Image 1 (cartoon, rainbow, N blue to C red):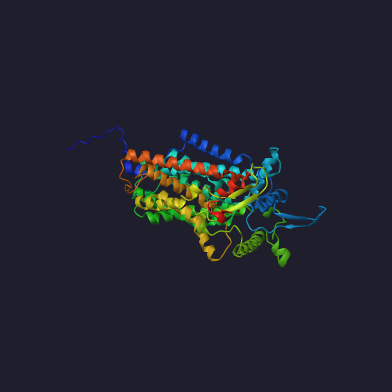
Image 2 (cartoon, rainbow, N blue to C red):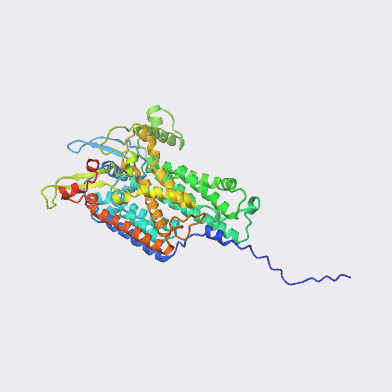
Length: 544
């Protein structure tokens, strides 16, 4: 006789499988709320803000392309669109018309916001007003670079070094104190990239939580993937799409970054699936993420069109009623406005493809990192300087010590990136590539170009310098987040390598600061003796 005993004790569930430590290390991210890192980043941003806001209203007159963008910003405030008024000598209005402009309106709306803020603060509608928003955006860029570098490298020190390098870069400094569009373009591109880095961390944390809850990534179908839910929505990726669309609403060249960012997102999604052991990471990443990626793409378009809101809401913008006024055709609601905007865009594209006239400050993409042709925004030979002859200039010139380090840094980025198979090197290099390489195609068309077209690439070039500095400090790994197959680049003991690396990195930042101080008068239009000005022209006529 067989006796069967039935237990009434509750059966405990089997414990979830423990996540291997090396997988956990690859999926984790830095603590974003560590207060000391925020204090340090705030200090760097404060330095940038003080440098940029001091004497912002000098020169008090319109300089360089402010004659377009500051003037058109006022027109947007008054009319909602670029509306040109031509007056005679006696001030009488001769004619008024919708102004044909060749860039989308969002950057000018941001300049207009600065004018309105200055007016509300009682500062007045002057140079300070049309430049202050550039300062705000420039300081935000310094903060974003600081925080993004910390997140990527796992080091507050390297993050602050990257932020200081941007704060002390004459190129970024001058752009953020001038009412032209390129600082806003660079801001939106950088912000979109920062959101993608946040998205990467968020998606990896999601997989880690799922593994800790017992997910078997090798299971087929939905059983091997994290549960759908609120945390499954890639909010940061969607934000990146919207920001990139806003960048396109400043200048079309932001679109160069769209395919690069799409490839990065796909590679990161494949990477996380390979890390956790998904059987078909390439296929699954495509199937899982194509919908969200399409949604982000839709946000690019929606945000871009939102930048044209003033044009849509008025009847006086350029070509606003092209179908009806010039072709005598009926304009359907919404569709008609989009058709008119499409015709306007064809005119804009035609203009940009035909800009081939010579300009004294034009330059080619291969010259940008060499500082072969900076741009003089302002020059006066008068003023009081303590010498017989004076020179006062606002020169768009990157801090030479920093910019001449970019090419070696890119070489180091490739070396360390390949030897470590490091996602950070790929991401930084891809951003720098998207910011500069497409312009080589336009060089073949003899399209007139300028040094400030490199603005969207500058944050990535600074991140490349910070990355290489980190490699010199830590050798096999940069910060706490290095992973993958690593080859030691140095034979020095770790402690000695770290000590010498810190000395080299600190010395470099100090050299950049000294160089920035030396060229500071040429960044702010300060009158100095002509002989002192000439000594700063290291490349002679190429800088004059």
